[in-house]
Image (cartoon, rainbow, N blue to C red):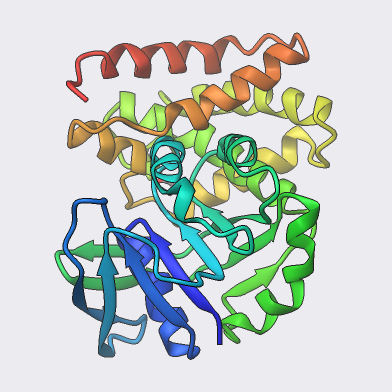
Amino acid sequence: MANWNILGAGAIGHFFAEKLLKSGQHAAFVLRPESDAHIRSFNFENLAGENTTNTVMAQGKLTPKCDFLLVTLKAQDVLPALTLLQSQIDKHCCIVLLHNGMGTAEQTEKLFPRHAIMVGTTSNGVLKVSEHIRHTGAGVTWLGPFNNQAKRYKDIANQLFALEELTWCEDIREKLWLKLVINCAINPLTAIHQCKNGELACPALYPHVVKLVQELALVCEKARLPWSYAELQAHVDNVITRTAENYSSMHQDQHFNRKSEIDYITGYVLKVANAYSIPVPANQALYAQIKQQETKLVS
Ligand code: KPL
């Protein structure tokens, strides 16, 4: 039985807390340093509408002998939070990053050069309303090694949840890039046009999606990723159809005046495109527009 700490007590953090508890692991939430330790109780509703009540320890520091630190914070909050906890993260603790966007694993490795770092992506839909967590869409979670130190966790990860939703992926970079392309094609456009994902399929917006994906395909090709433009477009179209009724996370961030993950989504692609000298004007323009809108935010 492993000792897991979860940094990020949002919908996804609670989703995995439930999975970990159900598979017999120890799980605890790590909150802001000033938080008092308490037992947190939350309700989990599965896809069949069945409810369970779960209790989990929550405190402002890591529990002793933490084997895995699962970080489900938004990308831009990862580095500040890990920096605060740096002295508490034992050298045997494996750091597992699970969020939209890319770029945090490189930052984490600079801070923790000897630690095992795993990265992952999930397509599960989860909604959190107060202490009620609802699994709204079946999906898959991929986990894989970011560095060599993490490769030894393959077997543990496979047995870990003993649930079909979690799959080990040796080449996790591909899964992360595919999700990145999807997020670049959908999130900023839905935030700017204040629309649901499905509305991107309308004649006025779809040409913008195509332009973005064409640029993203050029970047992927240079980065030695295996998909053609047509394959990427098919993936994006599929997500637009499957999540037609959803508001993307960036749309929601904008709606609630929160800072979005744009620097780790489109911003990450711009850095890679720049390194390869590939022009990506459509992505660049969306990035600038979102950043412009975010300058109005206080935090
Ligand atoms: O991951 C998403 C997000 O909103 O961040 C997608 C796949 C676009 C679903 O809304």
